[in-house]
Length: 461
Ligand code: AMO
Image (tube, rainbow, N blue to C red; front, top):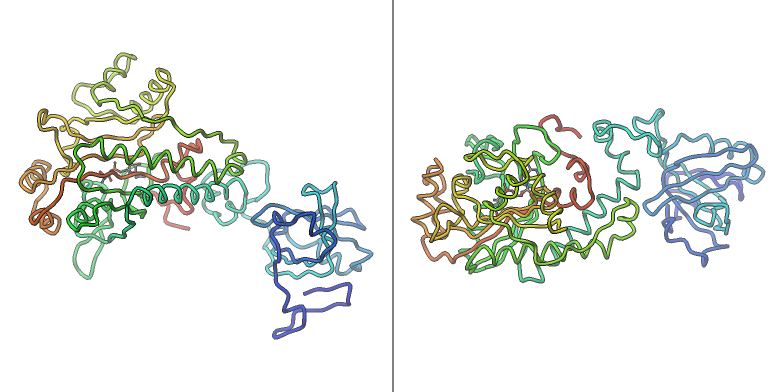
């Protein structure tokens, strides 16, 4: 610790009195007028230095914000002053000094240092500026993610993500769900072979889980009755888009004794509304920082049968071929139409035709109209956030649906076994956490919502 009021003192291993001092006693945001006149330790990154010769204004950034350290050459001595003001930007320092009111400083106070210590010297030049006005491209930002996240507006995304996740969790716990953890190294996929990551499991073929689908259904045969999981899901997505990741966080829910998919939609709706309300209440300052205005969506969310969605799109002049499923462009257009027509952003597309869900062997089909499933998607402003519905819980029917989808029931024996000895009717959904955050914060690329995104190009950092 450099102390220039009581003569120089240096860090000695095992050390001096100074060594016992905490590196930080307050975050910048915790300092109040009550602290004026007291001596405190603050710490963080040296964001900027304005050196006027005899006096220098240092901006010290920590998790809570930025505070000003005012260095006066006369008091520090020329050597100590020079050492401090010439430190490279983004070096980490701790400063002990007196807090003093100063209306010229942005925070309304400054710290007059009596000692400081360099904790980590930053190399020059920085691969990414933290306070630069001109934005770097996303790839440079992701390559230097630790620096990127030092920017308060980027950190805000991850703080909001944490609050949102907690809000969603709380809602599910309030609704009687139990949080579970299922394996991510699995023997069979549930969402089609095209996006499976294969791996070698002690000489046997295995896969990274695309979804906890088979396990969450399996758990319906255990009596836990209502389960949820927040965990990574892996998809070898063939193309790079702004809404797909190779590793995303899937919030999965499964509940027993559902009559129809409507019971599941009620859960989705309540969880979504509770989660957003929690984020608005707990994260208003962060939302303001990102200039995002959010309202709790009105309930109930509109339910629009798939066929009606197609009619709406065609009525608007879209070319939706008879035998093709709605594509991304159609989903986006539908989001706009729903907004224009009803001023709503959240809506369910219900009753997906069976022909588009043949791969989804676990979907329950309507008894009276087997050409339709009870499956739904939750759409938000043209982005699919969740999908789910009532499952098929009858062994013979689920086996037949598997075969129809080109799968071998023998590969799913562990799953089917749970259907043989008393499987209650059930339903559930998979919900993309990053997609929800992307749409709520109006981010153009889903990668913005992930600390270290994984896609076809990116395995590092
Ligand atoms: P689905 O495949 O529709 O359904 O996935 C559910 C939700 O997960 C999100 N999602 C993704 N997010 C980012 N990148 C991806 N590559 C990606 N793929 C999916 C979406 C999507 O709506 N087992 C079923 C769910 C169920 O029926 O319970 C399933 O996984 O938000």
